[in-house]
Amino acid sequence: MAKRIFVTATNTDIGKTYTTKLLLKEFASRGLKVGVIKPIETGVVDYPADGEELLECVKELNPKLWSLEVEDIVPITYALPAAPYVASGNTPLDIGKILLKLEELENSCDIVIIEGAGGLYVPIDEKYMMIDLISKLDAVALLVTHCSLGCINDTLLSKKALEGNNIPFAIAFNCKDSEKSFAETSEPYFLKTGQKVLKIARDIDIICDVLYNLPNR
Image (tube, rainbow, N blue to C red; front, side, top):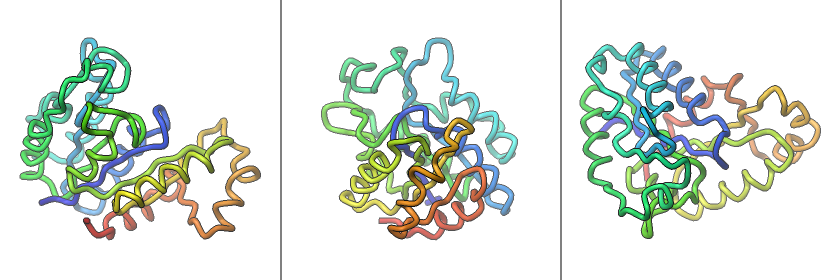
């Protein structure tokens, strides 16, 4: 089985796709055969936009995946831009379909980046939240968090959830240009409490080292 890394976040629109692409490029630069899958994408009318972006990226990095179609890396889509529970009308998750596509990818990969949808407690159906999917796929996690005011609360809540589910994880901060107050308003807390502040744009190499060495459950 390839190394599986699940990219999750403290909320939607935090930078999961951006981060996933950087991870793919960094791991590929180390000579690893990379793959990517986004098990569920909502808000899909004509085509899965995130999935197309990821597919284009991974094809450039792993020639063995040139024959892939977007359906191979986004096995489940819904039109409504909402939590999968709502977008699907509470259709039970077909976990077997996701596992099949993931295992097919792994035949050509050393490492697979799995991009989640929304945050950890986005409901998928009556049985599963997004955090449950990380465990079901036997992946380690990268928690992507923001740098605006409120990130302390958001980060700690998600961190506690991952710890409570015994999921090995790392935390990385996606600091946007509009979040320049981070160094003054939030970063001091993390530094004082022993949290290493890894920034995605600056520290992607270190983040990859940490993730690659995390033990599976």
